[in-house]
Image (tube, rainbow, N blue to C red):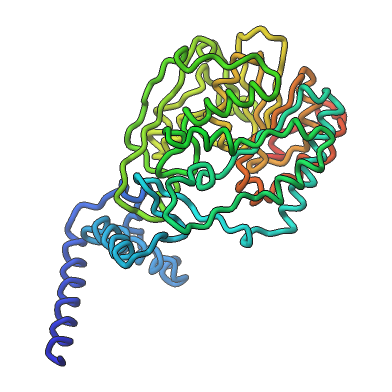
Length: 401
């Protein structure tokens, strides 16, 4: 027994030393396909960084990222956990057919923050109904991927429906019928490819079904049949945010665009001219940045203004999170102008936004339920009364984060 222990120690030391030597001589990788992220590169030694201990930290991270066959070791660690019978790894369920589904425990949310968010959003929606009329205002609440795709969960998995929060929001609204919860609509299509396997977002097909439900429930013109859109797959190598937590061997996702003529004549202005483009899609930027979902509107940012040629006489204010990014192209048929605001990336009070865009006729709020409950940056939605401000006083940079 003692000899076996000694032999095990020797083998481990040889593997560790040999791996370090091979790591030192092999070319260094810049990116890990398995983890969908950039890898640490060898840091430059400076006296200041060495004395502060920063060089040692960076060098340790560099060795960890560049270790010989690192991707294989990461994959092996996950495989061992699976063979031990674990249904979830790092709070991610290993679902059927390669679906990775994040655990969602209601007890882990900050209850005070959730209550504050419900109060802020309901107050905003009530103000908008009073200002524009209730038929021009709607709120889409999006279920978590885990709830929408519950058929793919392992047996006895935990699923949160957030019924209490959604009921509280609905009861706080002066026109509760303007809140549309998409759980049933999504679950009715869960046998289709409506959410990415490796990411928390819905696919463009999922966004289409959401758009169809919104159009029907909010009194818009009926959505066009899916056959009237040209489908173009721009990526077939997408590993999303959920995959980053587990590194399991599952199929890569495809990212597909649904195009039609209404999307061709658009102009996109981000953050008051910092970025301008004549397209809703940015495949080059998405490929360079490794997050394929960024093909939709390039990135998350505070303010985006989209001008179309729909000639409907209507302008939409859309308060959003990232789920709206692949939903927006469908809206180009409904509005001449779409103003997108994401309060995770800025804090300009909503009253000043209403002052700036005086042609707004309609308001839509779109939030993933989980992300809404976690959001700590909705204060800008409070106090929707218009606050007049001269152009000289207005500086958007003061409110960007």
